[in-house]
Image (cartoon, rainbow, N blue to C red; front, side, top):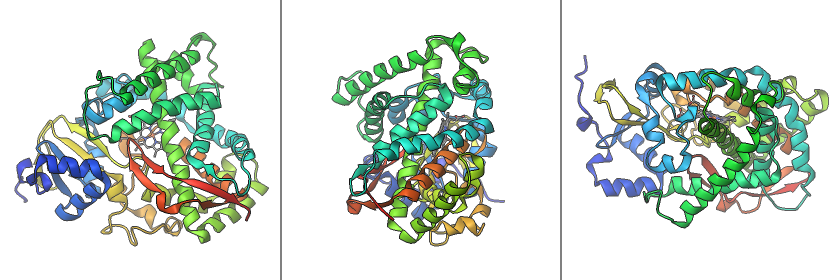
Length: 440
Ligand code: HEM
């Protein structure tokens, strides 16, 4: 039997200077986490109270088996994430029995019916976005898709489609959140820095937007607004602040992540013309023969594989952390209560020990079935276990459909491919993506 050793014995860059590590993490977190995993193994000590887990079975043990003894509250509401998400009463930022009751209140509204409705409604939204595109005219893909996604998900969840102006309000809030989440400087929130002021204004405008939705709870229709209805009529009845926090986190999670997934998949297809042509052929056939709905989605297996592969290489959720509330053991090491434990999709999805040709975009690997048999901790774009993404099937449905719709009509060319970089903020944002639609 392996002797259990303590946190101090875990190998890692913690032996280097604290400031050196902070600088390395802040300036390039993706490279820093990758280097730690490759140099030190499946359990890495990042600092006096910080551990990185990379072995797939360890990730599964943390997120699935031992989920109940990990807390998201402290982590999400402190430091970098606090200034970003700052909605402490939302389910996403709750723990234990409180989280369970809130998840229970929302879960039924995120069932199959919502994905079916999404598959039916997404067509019209795609039509609206693409009507404004002209062959040869450059487009800011991230901005265009963000309006589409926001209209779709707010219409679906709240029965009230946000307008392009509302989308601008959300975008103005997301911008300082993302900037602050990448800033290495932990300035107190009350300091009136330009970013803090922009964040404050953004939160105030978002508040106004959300108050519109909740002005008359008795009038909320369960068919048209299933998610809002589940919240305003659910038990425990949310306070006005809690309702605001739930709605804001739902809008923000839906807004950035699905948008990033569509844009990253399009960047990869633009770089792989063979794969793009397959998506196009499949999409032309599916849209030509099947009305909008889940049946059409089933006729897009290659597009689905391309989206899965994009979620592997550029997972919008690139790392997640929790605080342990009990003494635990991982890979033969003792990890005491109070340790912040991190796992990273970026690291595990690209681990050459587990993935063949890990850095290559190869949708085929999902069709052959091999990738589907990988251990769960090797691929977790939507998280794992009880706290996995509540919007996963909605997100997959809309992403696959939007990608198919764009690519069946246009071949996208990247205007300045060298400029495109991933920005690891709260989500992994594609920066510098301008596309030029071309005829096939
Ligand atoms: C491609 C799109 C998306 C990705 C990659 C994604 C990813 C994730 C991940 C990784 C988690 C778990 C975080 C953790 O373990 O700490 C999560 C949780 C969550 N997601 Fe998503 N998400 C997406 C879309 C959506 C959408 C469309 C919604 C809602 C409409 C949504 C709402 C949520 C919520 C509320 C949680 C918290 C669940 C809980 O704490 O129980 N997400 N998401």
